[in-house]
Length: 237
Image: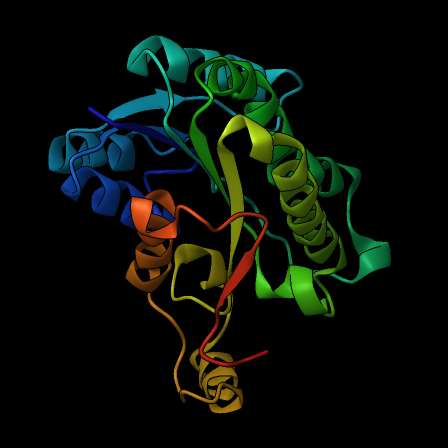
C-alpha cells in the first residue's frame, strides 16, 4: 500500500488533502498541532493516523517526521502543508510571531523533508509536494514575513528538485490563492468579495481544489513533472 504523510493534515487544505489521498487508497498519517477534536474526527472519518507535534518548537520537525516513519514504515508521498499566518505591519510583528512563521512555514518544510529524504534516496523513489501561496509569488502587504517564508518554500522546491531528480524523487509545489479556510477567517465578507472580484473566475477557491492538484502531482500521471509551481488561484496571477 502506498503511504502519505501530510503535515497540518487535520484542518483546512490539509484535511482535504488527507481525505483525498485516503480516498485514493493511501495509508495516510496526518500531523497536527493543537486541535485534538479535529484530529480525532479526521482519524474516524479518513482512517488516518494522527500525530501531534508543535512545529514551532526547535527540533520538532525531525521528531514529527520520525513518528510518521515509525507509523507508516516508509513515506511515498510527503505533503508539507503545515503553516501559520499573521496579518500585521512588518515593523509591528512580535518576536514570537516572527519565530513561529519561519519555524513552521519554512523550517517545518525543510527539516521534515531533510529527515525523510534519506529513506527516499535509499529506495530511489518518492514524491514531495510543498504547499506555498500566491503571496510567496507576488508578496502581500501586511503579510511580509508570511510572503517571505512561502517564497522561500518555492525556491526550496525548485532547488531540491534539481538535486534529487536523478534519484527518482520528484519535488513540486502547489501555490494556492485565496481559499476559504480558517486561515482566512480574519477576512471580512467584504474583503472576501473584493478578492473574488479581483479573481478572473469571480470567486475564491475551495480546499478540495487544492487537494485535487496534490493528488495529481502524487500520481503516476505526473511522472515527468518536477521542480514546478502550480498556481491554484483562479487566474489571480
